[in-house]
Length: 270
Image (cartoon, rainbow, N blue to C red; front, top):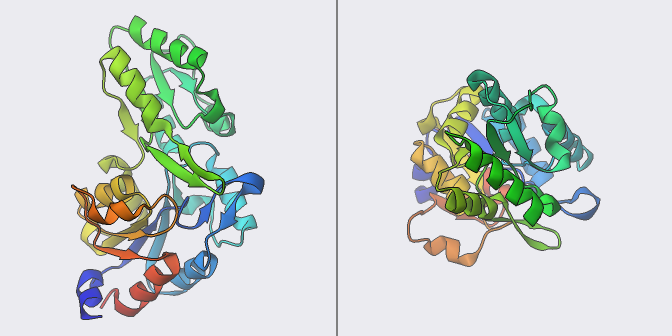
């Protein structure tokens, strides 16, 4: 236990991934991961600051929070850092008018954005809308632009639903990057800017914060590159091979969020 004491000493804030850590999405909205509802409640009763940091891009932030509340979680919209609102801010600041290749569930986030005469493409986890026709339309728009801009809400490879592993937006982004000879701008994990905005909202420095996630690259690697510590849960998209990843090693591996919270409440902020 002395090892955990060293790893978690001085932690004052916690960033929680949502999908694969709090719940697994799927039919009927999904199911909470065992012990996670109580784990979030215990964290919130503690002295630690808590914020949720997600790449969810099939639902608006409001829809996601409503779903989590139905599942029993104590969470509000203001506590969630998500890529769609951050992307809208970037579009407005840079005068970008997007062609949207996104899921209908998140489209409402872009209602106030000018989409006439697109001068960029915004991609998210579009699910069934990742058809050849829709991918080719995005490709054509990018190829017609003098300075093509491709923005992706996250760049995950896959995620887990109750029915199994699901292909994520990253695979489709790679296809357009390859075809157009460009590199996408990522809004969401593992982007350093995204983590920094979450830390700013949390109100702690990177060295005082810890990320808890199921994605060895997006959650763990991304957080560590920002100077945070990171724990990987063995739920969600976790694979046993993650513990032997050639480039990323978590500061610790735990069976689930409940175990992570047990350890944090015992050792953090000491």
